[in-house]
Length: 449
Image (tube, rainbow, N blue to C red):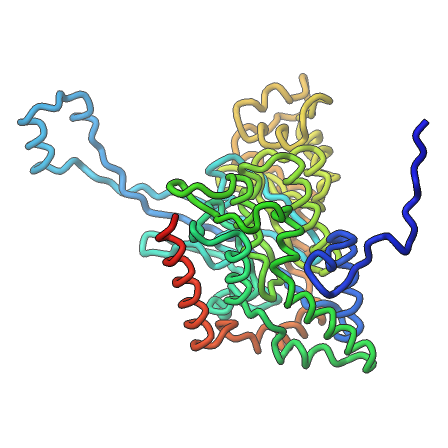
């Protein structure tokens, strides 16, 4: 029989400040707890945080539709081609509703799962909240969005400093390595602890203030390496990222680089859109588990859109929001969602994953889950699900949260952290020099790739 030798406390890895690996020696949860404890004592108050509220948010787009049915089946002859050139087909404008009166609250300290079929409005909601939605003359936006009781329009120029948005698509400089990509992202977001942050970390005892400064300075100094450790990119950190034309890291590794690139800076809100594409279930679990720790320990507001999360990943979330055709089917605690839809006459089979079941309810697959001879009529269309949710006690609780007075800590955060925030983390000269170094690195390497 094989005996196991216990690891003594003297040989066990301990958290240290000398490198990213040392900071991550005991895992992300221990690191986040350590940082939160040190900074909390020096701040003399709660960690900076952000409450996101949106009320009756609607987004519509006027889309030009071409009616070309008459020429659909014509042969591609020269006369027909000339006719299409000089005689334009009829055009009409169609009004497409992307989001329809969506209301809710994303609170600090919670991680929320955003579910919905493609075209349900998930990406539109995340882009609206992050200020990345492409506005044009044909787009109409109604409703209110506030951050700690500040209207989005008032801080739209500095919003990227507070809100991180991870896109579905991976856009990188293909000839930069993984580590270089993260290092440059860190530099552009301010690689050093700001004077404002140092001033904020002065509300404790001299010893507590010194410990907080040491911890914060170590995180800023080694943050790219910490992200590499968190995302499991150690083995490919010196490999170029690549793209469709240049061989580099794998698709899953590139997706993790995209996720890591948006972790830098003093972000209070993290919005992630379909980050599991190309990732295996273990990698997805690790990333979501790390974000859960960030939300719970550092009081961040985290919202992540996923298409088909496993039951293990689903269990990591506090709340879930379900969108269908731009309307709200559900927004509330994960542990109440199954019971809520049972009250509407739908039952999740034991062999079915909860997330797949929830997604199917907004499609024609819903019939396989309906309870036979139910005492009330089950909703079918997206509008019927939305109407049913507006009559639920879960919706009423979310409306109470939407109208509730703001925590004084959140209002204090506006004065101490939001108003002093500059539009850019780097000065014009520093930013220009960083850009030049990045361009020279890319141009030089491109010649040999």
